[in-house]
Length: 305
Ligand SMILES: [Zn+2]
Image (cartoon, rainbow, N blue to C red):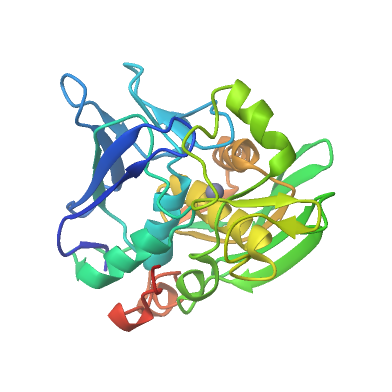
């Protein structure tokens, strides 16, 4: 059955790029509602549905906007947490322009969602079954969806800095794998890029506490890496969050090669532009058991530092 969270949960923090302090509150929502943000600091509290065609260009993040222009940016880590925990319906109230970065991963969001637990709603889960290959390319970057009876991901990155280098990871997202393997991997950047990002008004809320900063072979963030391949794991976390804007769980094998937020959104646009590339299916109990959040409990919550 579709789910929502049992109780309201709030997060206080700053936006990674804007540095603006915000409070974000997840509230239960009814079956069929999907996930929508609400800018509670603006007049009329405009609602911004978290769907692929609400995405507008955003630098180094995923940003959605309502027709009125009200927007929320850097939604990918909370969207990944919702998708990875199997939450289908949520209202996300926020009193500023950007989701709080917390520790740079989805771990804090996942821990709170699993702590309050999920409530089953009286409606079946609908999933999006990919029926044919859809692919987008841009230079040496590529993103692709192929048919699969559950969600699988394969990602490849290649950075000059030896602390990242080449990393490949392929995994099934069934059996709570997002929570166990991906959710605590943090966003990362190269020390050499920080001045340029700040000059463009980006990464103003970034610090060594909420991002992995690398310089050549060195990891500057205290405590080092959480996983030797934390960077590619984070790219998969981002991809799950961006794919969640399909509006329902995807049944597909996703491949990303150096793909970023804009490319994953272009992939969804290509999927929905092509007739017969996908169809909506009602999840049988067997299919529902293969979806990313199935079978998780409070005991699976990541330890949050
Ligand atoms: Zn990210």
